[in-house]
Length: 200
Image (cartoon, rainbow, N blue to C red; front, side, top):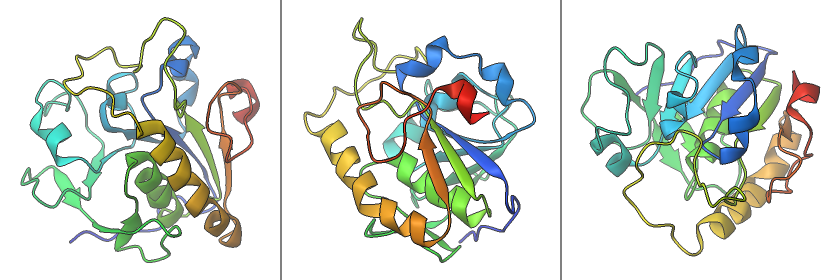
């Protein structure tokens, strides 16, 4: 099993999720910054340092995951059944709080939770969330990557994610980690919601 190392001590990390709000952002402004892409969000920013996913079925969908020449960063998962040699595997623990153990990340319903925990293990002191919308765009678009998503929206999906974020948020404060949501219109109100420009 893989263990995270403190490679970003004191840095600001950007967690890029798949919400459609990022479609209006100039993500080229992330160049030179520390970025973790969540699942298929790698498609909109293939220069991310890390790709994190928790869903083994997602990796089995070849149209969603990156090919060997599409993404050169570190790939980490809690899906222990994945056997691809490109992918590092880390233990998953219940999201009662963010884990302080670099051999595990906390999550249940959201890979974003695990990506945040990974950034904490890397030593980030500020984490900026991108594409954490918890709702579709006005035109009904659910994702920023425009890839064909094979699964229907689970009715409680966003509610479950919101509850998960609420549960782990106090532990980030206790760890001295600041988290902000770079979408003023996000349905996730757990963390301060700020314009992207204010988070750079």
